[in-house]
Length: 422
Image (cartoon, rainbow, N blue to C red; front, top):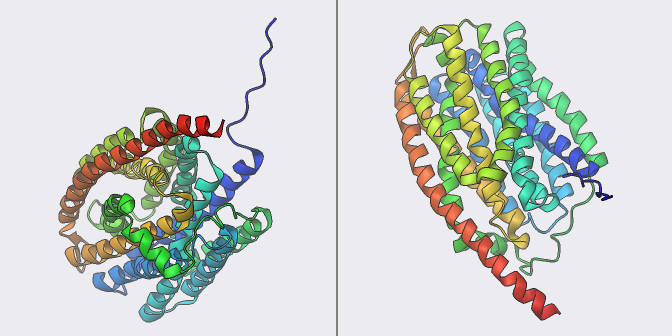
């Protein structure tokens, strides 16, 4: 009678805990940006579209600066200490947002929040690559992207309800309070992450940064990242106002739109992560990008729309938008070497934040809010995003080919190394 050894779990208990903590951390960071979507409807009563665009763009612009500065040091310290430093600053910046009472102070608060918050995702990505095997990273990315869905299901609707019942400061109080508790949990449970220390022979942080930027292996990845953030930063800040004043959705029904999109993403994210590992990351990216392109054109050209149809369009579009992120992030993690991992992730985050900030400012120049709140020229955003999506698919083709070729080369070298060792 044959006996079968018990099947080993894909993740250890500690890895599961880290997925939960990193996902919740990502939840607070994503929510901090996402909450500006519903708050835009309120803030546009006091700010011009240009001012609101700068409030949105302040975060990614300052995040870009801090990510560049941090890139040179990202591989020289314990990743846990780096994470705790920047997450603490992010929470303090969010408290600053809660206390802001006018345009200049809110703008300053978003700059402070961005200086710290913009680096957190890249540190989290480096930690994921350190803790998880390559063949499981698509799945891990799927779980961490559930943070975005959770922000849509719980965070954004709750923040929106708090804002309309009290004032726009309350959502920031909510994020800051939850982040304080989460930060304490991360500090207590996360173990030091130091496996990368000593691998990098470059002592000068600036030289380490410049060598990462100049590395020809990473050039295509950085160029691809430039266009990845375009859709989100152009579309989301004005989404609430567009839903209400262009599509005719009632104020309280907007909450249901966010929750429906979030619930769909919560279900879809882990499935997309698994599919990326099995069917190929590039294939999933192409399919999701094609659906996104179609849905963005449909969405941005809508006028008065029945609620059921508006919900269907939003759900399909948002699932497709973020289905692109999971395989793209998994692909990006396969590129950097161990000694460049933190630096690469930081530079990549800086590129993403910079392009996102430019996209937000560009969107605020294209879109015009009338006295009734109706947004003019919104379809133009759809066409700009469609062009960006098309170019990104072409670049992803070459990026995936590079990753596959390098992986094949490594496999060919392994038998030779084993023979030499024996």
